[in-house]
Length: 455
Ligand SMILES: [Zn+2]
Image (tube, rainbow, N blue to C red; front, side):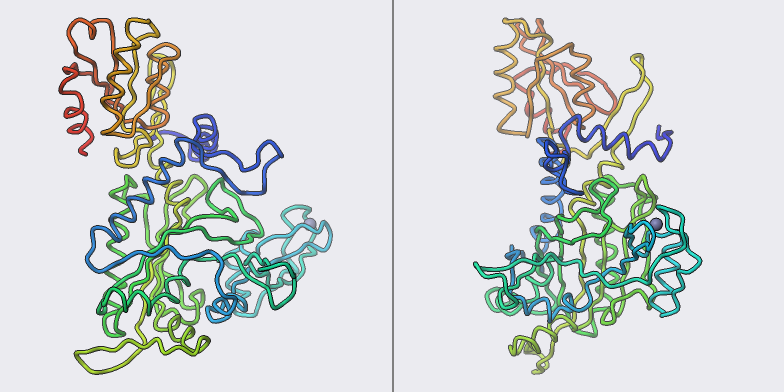
């Protein structure tokens, strides 16, 4: 069924996303705001369902992970301790001719250039500018990706604050608070979902790389002896989550970081990559960060963040295994994996084959027509369905077009109310994937829907 040209899926999805209300360009009436995006009525449902699925798996169904919701603005010393002020930079290359700016890794053979740069042997003299073709690219300079702002009325160096470039630091600085109130023993984790901001030089690929985005991060605290085993265990747990959300295993792969691309404190790191329409790209990272984070925050804050192990009577700084996935990237990957089209008598049927728990609407109630005898019954049926499932109601246009519309936003089940329904108190359930239809009594409708949705 997936016989589409790869390059066209991205364009089709972007257009579908706007047409059906998944994602709009931010500030569109002003011409857009540079790679920022707004989630529309069905997009917010989808993304919330993705986040809920993560939270349920990572927090609610586990006995060893708790959640927090940290502030975006933090003490500026946090970002010195974390290394972001000094090191959170991208190599920025400027063309001496046309003044275009590029991230080093987006030049032709960029990955090799980035490797050369890290090894201090980069030579750009033979590389042509992708924009003007001249060989006048300057050596890279480091560009810090954090958004800077000021707290209070005075814009001076004492009032500098940063929009957080990752959510993880709120977890590290709350380690002691959480450990004390929950009385957790190692190993245990702290999870968080929240916005983060990066001043990307060249954002793009729809919602894949934007300057404002949402992260779902979990830091798992353990002894140094346990951490390597837990790193492997979390790789498996995270892979399973993606598959359970409808991503085919063959569209997922791990890419282990080579020693020269890992952060200096990381003992091991891997990306989970998905085959996006523009190629294999990372959408989750799993990192064994050693004891770097808590050790640095101990040094910079002066607080003793060691953990006391009752069994051994020892005090030590816990090691951390981190899982970090972008909510927007995961949502995009789920959209890509769900997208399907198949020939039908009207040409092509476009279907988003979401797993039911992710679908924006589980059920759509559709009267066969806008007839005044049908509509009151259809609205009664919707009123009965609404408290049980996220659902929608649609009475405009021909029934076939309304089915197509629901297929395009991935609604698993449609309930159709027709003239016979007035006589026999039965309605038709139509399945998105098979288009099979069955007739059920209205009195048993909710139970039937629940069974079909596996809810
Ligand atoms: Zn140029």
